[in-house]
Length: 192
Image (tube, rainbow, N blue to C red; front, side, top):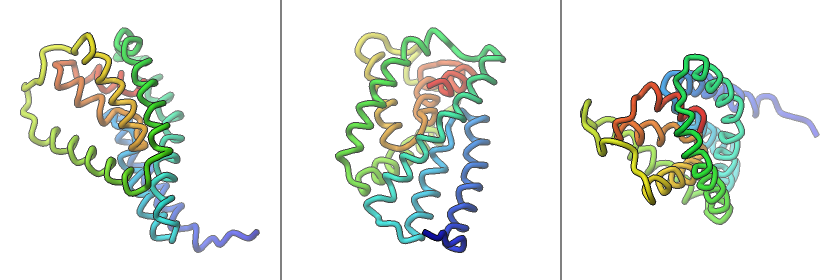
């Protein structure tokens, strides 16, 4: 089996650029590279004539695989600065993991078009929320407890898995809207 370098070169260049931009965003904002990697990989795979019903699944799965090394690196750096809220990490970690498992199971049954729509709708919603939210305005004065305190991290884990992102794009705005310090929100979301 021979590999056509001219065919793979656009994919390689797109992934290097997406990885660089995604890595910078992950380090600065706590929003992992998935928001960059998934659309770039999806578009590139479509340009390379990969079957549309497979390109979104490949993009999401590839992005999820890149999260592990970037998260480890980011967590180490934030931990050294004492910015991670380990109590929140323990409280939400199991629920985010449960949501991620449920999201992975759901992804098996969802078509590429549905995953694409989920990615687009959630990314647009988060962008709009961040754009229109006034500085100093909060949804709540503190993180919810009880069922809300459980459903939020389960939802973050599930939706993040369906989108192929690590969860920082959902965790940071959620924590910030609950009057949680942004520095700790970014650091703790890197752990999630």
